[in-house]
Amino acid sequence: MQVIFFMVGISLTLALGFLGAFFWSMRNGQNDDLYTPSMRLLLDDDQTPSESPARNQSSL
Image (cartoon, rainbow, N blue to C red; front, side, top):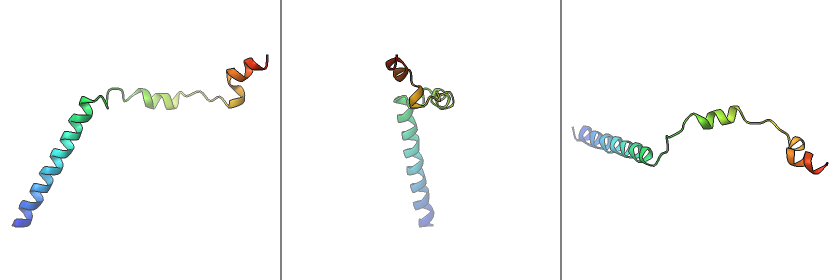
């Protein structure tokens, strides 16, 4: 019976820790924009270093 009380106490402590981390992340703006970083990866330019505009202008 003592093990059950110990496990309930540990689980409540862990749950409160995760809840506190969730509220901390929401307060600090960790989840403000979840869409843009994933789209930036998909829409990234596929230029090689030889195709960069800086090199093309310097050869003119």
